[in-house]
Image (cartoon, rainbow, N blue to C red; front, side):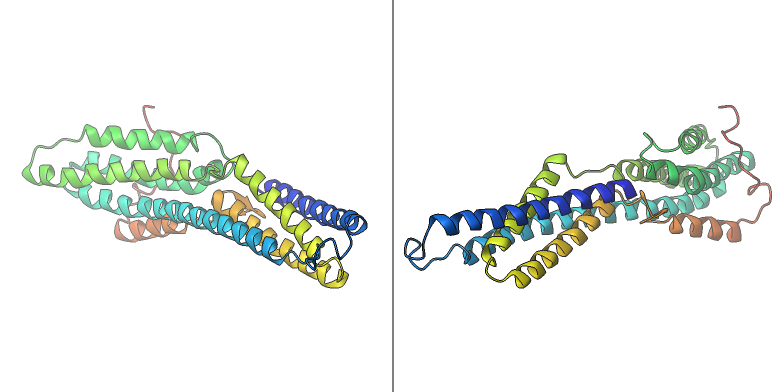
Length: 281
């Protein structure tokens, strides 16, 4: 992620500088070719309307991209919370099952959450296809144990839909978590952003050609705004990717869920260390 941020910021700075020098060059050529009388009072350096149009278009584009990126970020956050909530549902719905089956299902959930925190988070953040295989194996084990659970009593039959729904929600949330960290902004959109920054910088250089200090300040401020927006887009587009070693979204809801479950179900056998893979896999 850090490398991607540096690359995007470096390209942006290069586009701004190129636009600046291109604008200065165009203004210099126009000054030599046209006189004030040829421009009929509309000096090349006064491009207010054009600059306002381009700036507004770029602002709308970046605003839409930010809104989409924030929505994707919220979806990923919701998936994390759903993993915790569905785990609580599974624990509660499994209460009526036979002791050995209840123990297996609850162990599966605990190991899924532990693997998500210890292994899955780093794997998803590093864009490993499908996330951690350890978490995937435990999810398969959970689905298998739930599908083979005995439903001999009325209470077991009544609680099974909740158990099944909780398992489906947990599996779906983890799949969405894996998919939600994939970069969704296409390359062509980045090209549009870079080209827009080039045009804006050139227009600023032409518009304020006779006021060099103000032109430099304006170009610097424009670059600063674009740099912050691009940084936000890069981070929000992949919320689990580490930035300076830390992802934007931490597995705090999952850790809190484990703490709550351990307080509510303190059985030592239930909280034994999880093996690298489910038994029998």
